[in-house]
Image (cartoon, rainbow, N blue to C red; front, side, top):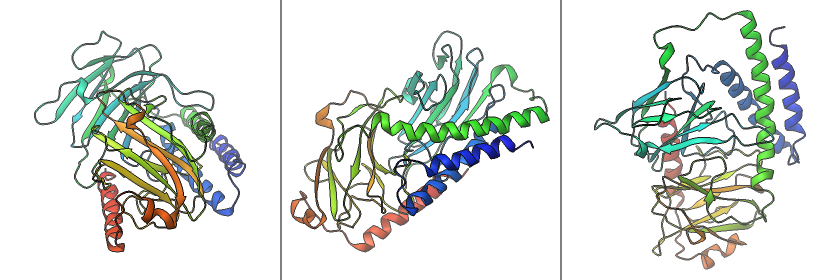
Length: 385
């Protein structure tokens, strides 16, 4: 059967999910199977989109194809490349806070993070008054709006980042290979179809195993209920810093994260499940940007991570996850961050939050419902198309 290799990969993938070290309850397994469904969808899409001669951008991750502690504030695109070919990327710059590009020499695997061969944001090239732009990637020498593809270049990743979900608008982006523009790829064959199903199975297993191993490298060896000082994001962009950690909280405990509001155009915090994916950020407040959060009179952002509602605007909901990941990001930086720019953490009983939280202000239930409605509208708008 043509699909047999993929069917076998799905069966093995189910075993990988069921045997994950953090699966202790039926709810853990239910979430794992939901994660598996998204990974199956994504793996088929990626296998069919693996086209370097007639490339196009595809969504790398989204609400139903999550992976790699996906940032709720980011729309991710990617396309595959050949390091000896020339590509034109053109589009219209939207009003999002950040638009960045990164060339990788491969994909993430269970044993390594791909090298970043080039990384920059839209400040590195010319954009017209109407927002239009055209940049080139190829083996030639770098110049205005031209970026050299180093040996081994395989993937172009684009991130479009929102800080204000309700006000910022997506742009438009496309890619073409210069040498094949105006021609067409050869017709599909049964051999190629068979190969694609096999590739999809390999992508599925690699994807699951990689992002179960990834937290062991960067999170779980850290002391629990702490956050690191800001540091360059591993495998990420040079203009992005992050602070990471993992929490373990009783239902009546809260983790208070206090961090200065940065001058960086983008600053955000999010929670992730033990599957190393974002929690439901559409219907729950499991992430906040500096634009979405309340800022205290002393210029600090104070976030309260807890299962039970502490009654504050900057509550991050645990959604039944006693354990999980925490990540803060700063993007489009013009300077390196230091420990003074980073977070401080304190764990306390939820009942003590009103007394111990500086500048505590009670939040009404109606206000929180309005916040959720705004999140639902914001994601629905940016995910169209």
